[in-house]
Every structure is written in C-alpha cells, then in structure tokens.
Image 1 (cartoon, rainbow, N blue to C red):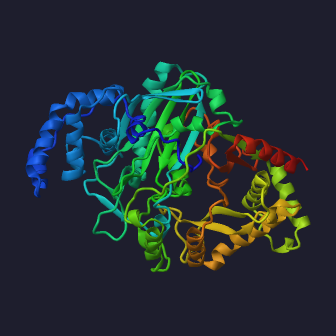
Image 2: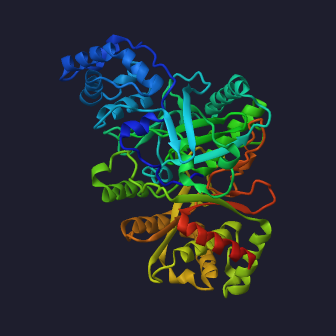
Image 3: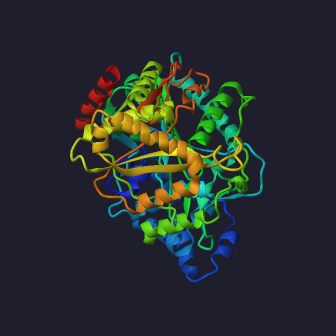
Length: 565
C-alpha cells in the first residue's frame, strides 16, 4: 500500500484538483428545468436563476477549461459557480450534467486567490505524466433503486483517515502504443464495469446529511467510478524497480479522491501507460468503506474478470452488505463521534479528512525483502534470546515488524527516554462472536496502538526481543481483550499523543496475495504497499519503507547487517 502520508500540496486548491482532469468534454445540460425550479423553493430565487443563465453563457469557456487545463475562467463564470454552489444548492451543478469531480474542480479554481494558468502536465522529479482522458465507469447493473448502507463501528474508525493508496506495475513485452488503446484499455474498462457489479458500494459516495447522526454509503443507479488515463515517458524499469527512489515519484501515479464536508468519493483509479514498456494501476480508496482485505478482493476480482471474463469459482466475493452481523457493544459508535468532536470541534460533523503532514522533498522510498530463511532465523533468535520463548506468538508478521521497528528506533537514535509509538491494523473477522463471514463487504479491522514505550527499550542488544514480546502479547490479546478494550487504548492514545513522538505504522499484509493479480499480461512486477508477500512466492515478505535520505542510509545498514548477523 502506498504510504498514507499526504501528497505534496500545490499553491492552490485549484491546481491540485485540476491535475487529474483533462480530455473529457462536459455534456450539455440535459436536466429538466422544472426539476431545477422545484428545488429553488427558498430565498434568493432570482439570484439562483441569474447564476444559471450566466453559467450557460460560459459553457464553451468551461469546456475549453477541461480540455486543455490552461484557459482561464472569467470572473462572471466564477461568480456563477460560487453563487450556485454556496447560495443555492451544492448538488445543482450535478443536475446540469457535471460530475461531482468536475464540480469540485470548478469550485476549487474559482475559490483560488489567483486562479489561472492551470496545467495538466505534472512534473515530479524526473517523471512527467500527461493526463489523456477521464472515463466514468458504471457498474453493469439494471438496478433502479438507491442503495443506502450505514457505517459500522469498524467503518467509523477510519472516517478521518487519509485515503489508502496503491500502485501496481505491469510490464508489456509485446504491445504497441496503438494496441494499448485499441485492445488493452477497452478490456480494462469493460472488466472494471463488470467487477463493480459485484462491488457496488465502490461506485457510490459517503454522505453525511445534517439530520443523520452518522454518515452513510449511498449508491445511486447513475453513480460511477472515475478512471483517469495518463501517459509517462519515464523509464518504466526504474520507476517500477524496488530500489531507492524519491517518494515524490509516486504522486503522479495515484489519482485524487474528492472529499468535501458532506460528500466523499469512495474510489478513484488511474491507469498510466509507459509506451512500449508497461503500465501501472494506481488507486485511492476511502478507508471508511473497505479495509485491505476487501480492497485486495476487488483488485484480484478485476484482474480475473479481465483475463478470463468471469469470477473465479472458489472465490468468496464480498457481496454480504448486512451491517447487523457486526456484533460490537452499542455504545462504541457514539464514543467515536465524541472523539471526533474532542479532536476537532469545528469539523466534528464533517467528512473532511484530518490534516496530515506533507511529504518532504528529501523523503526516499525503498522496498526491502526478508526471505523465508531470514524469517526462520528471526524466529529462532527470538526463541533463543527471550526468557518467555514458550509463550511467544512467533508469526511472520510479529518477527518482521519487530525487526523493522527496532531498526527504525535505532536509526533515529537520540534521547533514550523519548516516546515511540507503533500501530498496526488487527482483523476482527474471526475474533467477533459470531465470526464475520468471508463474504462480508466493509471494514472489520481496528487500529491497535502501542504507545507506552520509550526508545531505550529498543536501542540495546535486546531491542528486537523486546519488540517481539510486545507485539506477541498484543496480537494474542486482540481476541481475549475484545474490541472495546482496544478502542479504549486507541482513544487514550489519540487524546494523549505527545509532540515529537516517533511513530511507525504498517499497512498491508503478507496474506493479501497482491502479486496474484494477473490481468492477462502477466503478474505485477512490483506493487507499492507497506507489507506484502514476496513476488517469487517462496515465502517471506516485502516491506516498503519511506524515510529521509540521511536516515535511510543508516536504516539500510542496520537492516542488512541485522539479517546477516
């Protein structure tokens, strides 16, 4: 999974949003005027009508704006957009044929202090990406009724989290530029439509109406998923390699996920072609709608349908949408909402994401491997050096995370009494009573926070063994402690977080099998997530690490020497 730290923010919201829009002509307004008039049933009726007429007069200007990304919108056009979205109803533009993403782009551009000069070419380090088009992919379904799903406790836990981002690379050994657009891309789009039929909530939106105590997933028959198609002339082998590279290079390969105060998209996708070399699929999805296991099933289903035209027979599709099967204490959901208000009173009832630190320009990324032999060595070391060896839960996750954890703390060095925090996501599907069926769609993971420790516990020779003991106890305790106890620890950690704490979190899993997603042109050559099984299938794990360059050199030395010794 791509790092959850936020992408570099450009000078204006307009520029940030416009980077993902190009090549799609907005359809002419086709909405029934009587329907619009019926919605204009409050004050300011004439002002709203005047704004609509003004917007109609600058239709060509807007079309050019989306086509080439560099045409400025006039003041009158921007004023019309502002009046319609602020003083009338925000959804009015969608009734005129605009998508929600296009509405957000127009609003962002017009709200910018200095709108204009937008470009659709994004240059990042040594890589430039040109957006070719944006497709709207709808599920292949005849449903005419909206689908409304309430969020559960496990969903609400992630409502303010930054989108989950992934990039997966595929090499094309014998495919021309024309073949990609005439054969491969149509097949990817068609199979995506078929896949969304089995993952219907992904085409919808998160909505939080003022009268509702919590958000819902809402899917209307006309809802779609945004699929950006882009090209890059960068060296595919270098970009898809597991070696050291600037973290910024991945920014252009993942689409933005539109989020406002009362509405949020669930999924955005981007396919980037590296002509005559390969392509990658980048995704951004809202963690409040699905966890890593559900997301992995989506990607594997899409790949299988693209390659074979049908779902794998023994595959457990997440088609169960019944929220009542999530059996947790009733008082937990209100506690999450109370915590949201405690942490951010002004945006407690808003879908806007929590602010998060931008990625610094000197941050680099590398994918490191721990093979099965080294995993076995780590387990044996833990047994031999620990006085609690008989009671340890020595899973691959426990020993590899403890090893990386120790290397991270030693890399930072510094004051021995400084606080450190570690976080991982625990799957509760088989820990609830009754267990959650494999076919359930949604979240069923909880964030486990370990933050009662100081750096000195991991700086010495026994640092690895200490990490194993802590993680082992935590993993074993997930079932016996229950979700309520884990929530209380999570809540306390949120409220008492200390500035300057070294924080490390892991996402992904070596159980997801992301390297099995073959769309018909071979398995991925690389996937950018924090933790996954190795591509060669011989056991062990791959771990994606992002650090400042000066820290990365130290970390790699500790990592490699630790395995060798």
